[in-house]
Amino acid sequence: MDIQTLVTNIYHEVKPLAAKGEVAKYIPALASISPNNMAISLHYIDGKHFSIGDYNTPFSIQSIVKVLSFTLAHKALGNDIWKRIGKEPSGNAFNSLVQLEHENGIPRNPFINAGAIVLSDIILSHYKNPEQELLNFAKKTANETSISYNEEVARSEKETGYRNSALAYFMKSCKNIINPVEDVLDLYFLTCSLEMSTYCLAKSFLYLSNHGIVPSTNEQILTISQAKRTNALMLTSGLYNESGEFAYRVGIPAKSGVGGGIVAIIPKQLSICVWSPPLNEFGNSYAGICALEKFTTETGVSVF
Ligand code: GLN
Image (cartoon, rainbow, N blue to C red):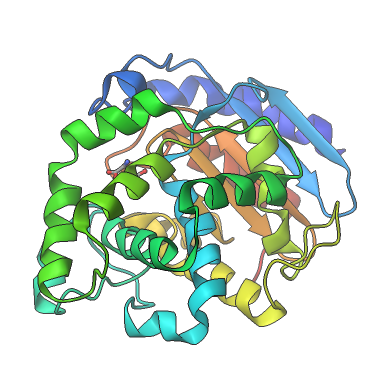
């Protein structure tokens, strides 16, 4: 079976499963998204691509941006980043507070909220115009210009971000936040509001399947080693406290967000992005996981 037929079949098979999940409700902009949106985009490093469904509709990428923030912060600090953030799966919800006190304000990994708040602090310290830097970086990795923040989402995130504020202030008390907490949170909330389509998002993650190089421009974003290690972190921590289950069922590095997107990569081959807003109990797209599970099962691709 060719890949287009396979992905088309998967799209139709998993679309009804979205009814088993629930759209994020904590801010109006997410609560009002139609649960019927669904898209799958596939990009190969040789330039071939295939998409189906609402693949041109920009959606709130939310925590998926943590991978882009991590890339910028990792480039800025190198291995010193590991003095401020760990590399272990958290086993707790993405916005959990419990572990942080036991571990003296050092977040378990860059892909939970506490970790990404530290990433925002690092980006603020190292880049002159951090907001623009991250936006330009997303555009550069995707080699696309139609990517923007959603100011309304950023505002609502801020208005309801009590747990994120608690995480940030606690880390400040442990001296793991250098800049003023309000500035760090503003950047964190803004980055969560980034909107991209599955088409752009899958394209943007190709540098991670291509040893750190954007295939369409040949620009080296990360060293081979940094790219491989980012993928290792996505495999172990990309789906919060469902990362083990996801590695077991799907078996490839991926990152999810509460907007219902999941983007995954297969080294030296491709990246794939699925969007279906209804989430499971861990805050990951219900149908998105099913689609990726079918994709790796039916194509036989794996990193193992
Ligand atoms: N904006 C969300 C938050 O900070 C992002 C969480 C997510 O996508 N898991 O809580």
